[in-house]
Image 1 (tube, rainbow, N blue to C red):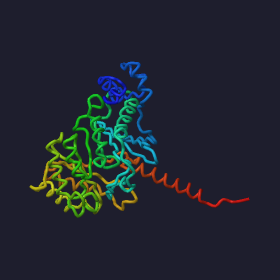
Image 2: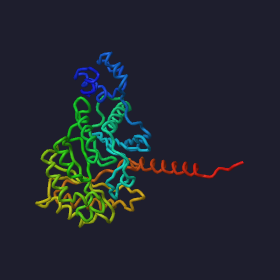
Image 3: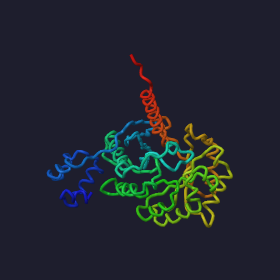
Image 4: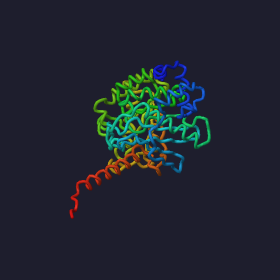
Length: 360
């Protein structure tokens, strides 16, 4: 922003003013930026605009969860979900349109990869949600206290756009979020975990989902490139720089696949072993079924028993609450529905174009 203002012949402090107007106050009309010189405002109107990706849909759940579907062009859509709780407001954002990792239990992965989001498209999700919610709730106070990169995409595959977006979210002139309250979730891109530790360490969550390489290879294909020993070693290195003193492991509970007592015992051994162990907590996630997966959600009783085994071993364990079921709030569901409908429409158009025309 400083460089941009310099190109317009403006001093660096103008960049800070502009940054605050856009991010802190959510103002997109340059004429309303009252402490900017009129001549500067006129320059801005000639060469710049403030806009988030357009909202294609908004769904509000009975439990207060809000899901936005943003149109990012060329039939690509991304999802953003706001989850209100008594002591926080969490925004789950996307980093890519689609995903190339292809985890077996992930609806987004089954849709394939379209493209990386820009830093602006990543931050734009927060910008839109924060200021839309303030307006809806009639407040100027911060609504979103936590951001999690657990939406569509693998954030560390879009590293050049991720880090500037993170820095904007953390900046006191923008959203002022704590590093402890911004979480990047990764399927395990080991080299980029090490880079993030030095470039912009925030809270780290790792999509684990299996206690052994043999099983994880079938659920998270990236494990074949970065197996568990390498992944856990990277997590230990990350703790030297992280704002929290533990790594969160996400574990999707799949009926008959990874939810047996033997799997719990293997997990305990994995994170407690002298060579691989590290400080961690587990977040057990009830699976959100979708037709193409061929998988089922573990029964609640089995999830509770699994959590009990981990807790009894001294591992902090939580079970994620299922939120927004009535609005398809699970990652990728709504975008997949739109994508499928778009494909059907395109096929119908092609068939109409190809059909022989009657002649008089």
